[in-house]
Image (cartoon, rainbow over all chains, first blue to last red; front, side, top):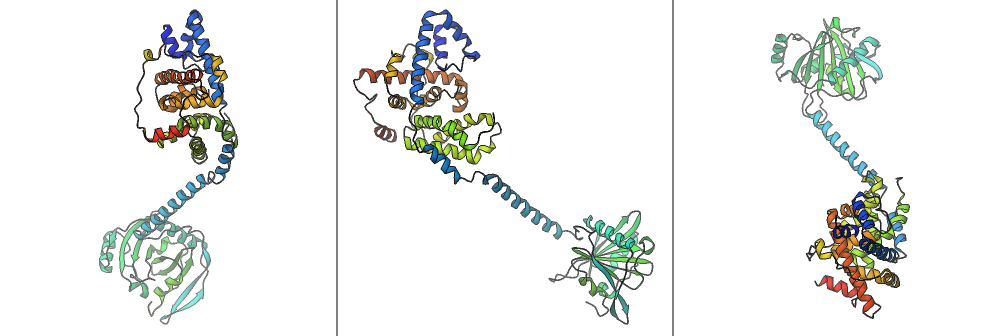
Length: 283
Length: 185
């Protein structure tokens, strides 16, 4: 490094000594120590820079500037930024979630159940006599209640049917080939509903048949799902001829036994909706 | 560095920021607005800065960017090599500078070409090293050195004129004249 290069570099050397340990200046400063002419130049430049720096640092600042800055920020939503962004993000997530759930439910033949274990109220039944349904109070076994809850949870995990058809005979034929329960017997009200499809399931090593019905496109029509189980596989099922209704927060079930099979009818909503399928006069 | 509260931050940096802004804008009102705008941006976006030790650099960089954003450069500045700068520093003694009032020195600085004014002001405010100035202005360190050398030359010429011109003012132009000159090219 020669004197010319040293002068060039030392122009960036601050007069307050803050750059004393910057290695970029080390060689130039060493040359200052050796070169008297450079040393004189450097000290003079430092003195001038210090004088100019002092003058510029003393330049007046508008008296009201600080207050204006501080006052101005009081109307700046500086603390709102994060929660506003969080709020927008949360709202967006909720919208997406709602849209997603709706879309999912639209293509879901089986309703989802938020908390099937939270069973509400009592169980009751209708004794089917003389062509009309007479309400009775019925005690269901905790074992069977638990079984129903598990089946509802199981239903909530399903996402498709194996056989789609509106023809009951076609479904029975398919079930017969698929080792499902093809010889099921439906209550009068339910037998009038068009089926949507079916599936044969394996539940803890036991065969279960799922039939789905789509009552129609009316505002109050709901899809209903029927589980058909061998009577021997359903512990402490309801006595023959008396359907038992259970109410969950958003799901209702009706269970009954007929011959060698136990049936569980499931729909979302209130159990009153299921009563129609057991009225002999029809819904 | 402990994270500063907003008011402490203002107390510490609003004066050098304003002076830097004044050196850029040449107008007090605009410099005040620019300083306020910088703190506004800190209040609204400062939380995004993860390394709070860089708050000083963030403030100066933001102010400079805001200034550039509000300006459309119409003049291309010449590039000066080291040889051009050598031996061109006007003869001026520290005692002469001491005799000049601060406002006059500031006026002289404001006459320096804009290209050199920003690094020069950052240098004299002693807030930033040449490396920090390079990062702040997004130019290479060598360019900072070159601009400092050339800017000092211009500033000292202006200060020397003040001492020999027999006038209390460094340059005959006032601030309003400068504004008109800037606007009309």
